[in-house]
Length: 128
Image (cartoon, rainbow, N blue to C red; front, side, top):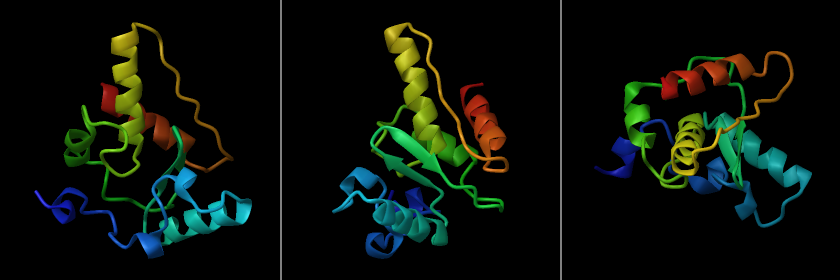
């Protein structure tokens, strides 16, 4: 399966779309982070890592990548095997819970209307 088929909702032009993980930015400054998030947002990349932290930007529109296809893609995959996604974070958390036999926690923060409730629904939908 080619990457175009696997990641039907992801652009392949990294130079224009920014980086998946902002620890890879040449300089980690406020301007570089904002610029990277803006580039990704303009190309409908709403998820970006900064190390193990997932940043999600509310697109204020329906996005095509919350289907069973994405669940299958992220289930059991290593965190960096696929593009950043809330399902990657959720799967990693779930596997850590099973392996470590310890409770896990996801902190969802943001301003009113940022999509916190929607993110929580996707997390709960993935594990249920």
